[in-house]
Amino acid sequence: MSSYNNTARFSEARRVAIFGGTHGNEMSGVTLVNLWTKNGAEIQRKAVEAVPFITNPKAVEKCTRYVDTDLNRAFTPENLSAPGGNNLPYEVLRAQEINRIFGPKGSPEAYDVIFDLHNTTSNMGCTLILESSKDYFNLQMMNYIKKAMAPASCLVLLNEHPLLKYSTSRSVAKHPVGLEVGPQPQGVLRSNIFEAMRVILKHALDFIELFNEGVEFPPCTVEVFRVLERIDYPRDANGNIIAMVHPNLQDCDWEPLNPGDPMFQTFDGKTIHYQGSGTVYPTFINEAAYYEKQQAFITTRRETLVASAIKKA
Amino acid sequence: MEVDQVVPLPRLPRVAVCGGTHGNELSGVYLVRELLKLQREVMKKEQEEDLKPASVLLVLSNPRAMQQCRRYVDTDLNRCFTHATLNGPLSDMAPYEIIRSRELNALLGPKGSPAAVDLVCDLHNTTANMGLCFIAYSDCDWICLHIFRHLQCVITLNLNPRSAAMEIGPQPHGVVRSNIYTAMKVGVQHMLDWVRLFNSGNVFEGGFVDVFTMVKHIDYPRDSETRNITAAIHPCLQDRDFCLLHPEDPLFQTFSGQTVRYKGTEPLYPFFINECAYYEKGIALSLARKRRVTIPAIRVQTEQEQQPNEQGFASEEEE
Image (cartoon, rainbow over all chains, first blue to last red):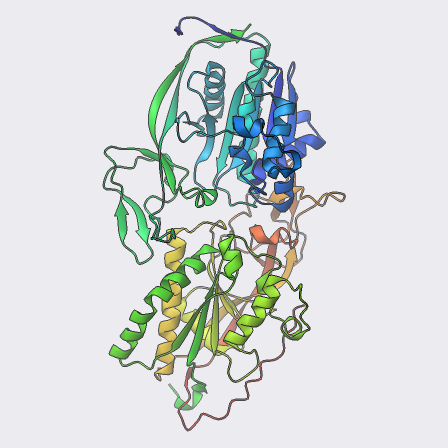
């Protein structure tokens, strides 16, 4: 039973990777990783080995999300142990390779931290994605980043949902951190989005450096948005979309959506209302890549998580 | 108004509206699908209001690219309508879009013949912040200029004409935004309404139209070895389509934070700023001059005025 009064000890976070191009058309991460591969001065910190890495080079070259299958869903136990060599889909082969270099997932040899850089067409601003509410190291890092960025906003999305969580490329590490910055169209590089992501990483690496120096971070609380449900577009019998995200909901990521509020607008102008039982906080509203994943947006609820103090072991 | 100053022009019995020329520009895809569904009701309304019907041909131009939600499968369909491409020899291994362009030419044209549709409106989206923008064939095309004036939107003239295009942004490719869809729907309705009024004998007053004519493109600064871009559109320029750009104004911001400035001598109007599909074409933004074009009053020709039309479509070559 964990007690928030105790200081949690973690080993030094020496081995850190920065993944770009997990989706080949999300340009901030591709650009940053290419930049830092050429000149890594900006990501150097004392006692930290920060490795920039393009996870899906073929998709990056074609400026497409993926070649055969979504790399950011590919790190399942079945895929990572699948035999079959070159007959496997490209991204499954890549997942196995990444697991060899930065993992193995779940083992003591795995990298300490992986930052996975993503963009979204949704108006999410700066978002950090957390995979476990019990990862106090990550919670403390996210708390540090949020305070360092204030008054600029940086929100935390927690995806611990047993059905909706997925096997990300960053999940190979002991402490996986997703960075999601939007809105930005796929294939486009916007200067403000690029700089925002750069700043988030700067603060993240500062935190790791402080931690590795032996700084103790006192207990903290972190507001998070916990994933509840995926909502699809209304579709006809053939599976075609018959309505769009309503203008009142479009771009309103993180704002309360109440029962009865407009949610979709059909192509001939009728409104479809949200029929849930309580207020939710929608996000990933109108993400281009999620049309094929049957997702118009996801709902979340606000929660406050507590992290114990942490210190290097 | 002097009656003899009104220019009579041929009727427009056949209009085509095309969506999905680029398969991931979704407003046009969804709008044409919706219009196909509604087509019967539209025709019924025309009969009730005793307007001379315009026959509207609704076309989904690139179905394979639409199915994959990509701009194109083999090659950009919107660059396949030159005289040379339409009439040259066709191999077995011809790109999908070349085959498709010939099918569309047969359906809508053939280009240059009396059987061609009278007006084509091609629906597009852009990631650039261009609002509702028309790309017209020439500054002598008074029909198009009157329509655009009626719609009160920005007009640009493309030096390489094919047909009138309606371009609306900003919208990411692969996404349908309700406000953008609605703007396009209203734009197409107004255009079709205008055509019906014109065909029914309405006189449209002359006046002035401000048009933007493309002068040149500017590419991103690139690494000499890898050809990767080394700078992004400057935050002061991003989203400022059709706002005058002066010499020394910021153009790009390099990844090391330096500003690259506009070195031209003439102030020009930028557009297609940061259009996703143009990275591969080596275009970060395009620059245009603005000028005022005078258009005369127009009306449809009476039956007596109608002569066998020498519809000489000048053969346009892509530059």
